[in-house]
Image (cartoon, rainbow, N blue to C red):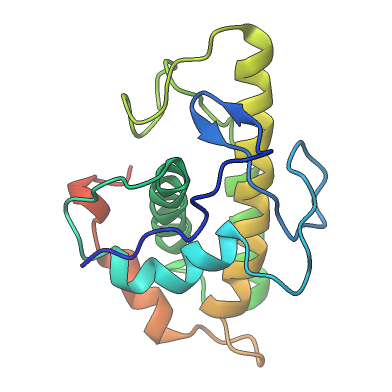
Length: 174
């Protein structure tokens, strides 16, 4: 059974492209509202549930936050694929920074991994808001993922990097 997001309440949450702009415990600047540092946010959920959810080929969506969980699970898979050959934390950090510098596509643009999962942006402002939110959430996820993928001494954690070989929802990572 797939793990779903616990963020089902949508009151007071802004949306872009049908995706809730959930609060983040983030030091990265962006459009996401600040979250309470003591509470779990969507990035914590995505990292916690990744190793279980990556085995599923189908993911039934029960709330709009599940769409974001699917996107983050795919992004974690891409990030682990980039970290796969990196033997030290310094090299892995450089690879993750380069991944973060890549252009973030939004629905309707070539390169977006899930056509049909999110609604197309109604305006250029909505597209830019969603792009900035995805960029912020990707950067935050990358930073937290490094602490999981590498041990405190800077060596790779094979129990995490082994999941780079998995295909999430049968999507081949370029």
